[in-house]
Length: 128
Image (tube, rainbow, N blue to C red):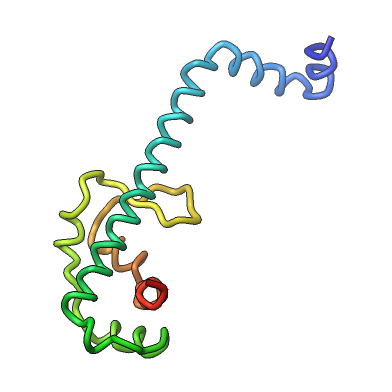
């Protein structure tokens, strides 16, 4: 009964699409599940990379950054060089995803520079 009502509302194109989904639901749902798992692991990579940068900043510049606010830390971070290659090697999965995103990015130096801007690192550093 519900199937007939649903099929009458979606039209002929929708019927074809629904039939294709029903025929291939296992593969489609499997791909979605694998992608979701990759997103979860890539977010874990983000957290591990962020932790790597915070530990590096604390070890190398902890005394200079002690007691500074977010704006001052951001200004300081824009002048220093961060170990991007070491950060890449600190994680094993080749994908990274920021916390509020579901898009997978390749874990490259350019991506890390884009994701871990000085403002992001300064906010995380002042929060800890």
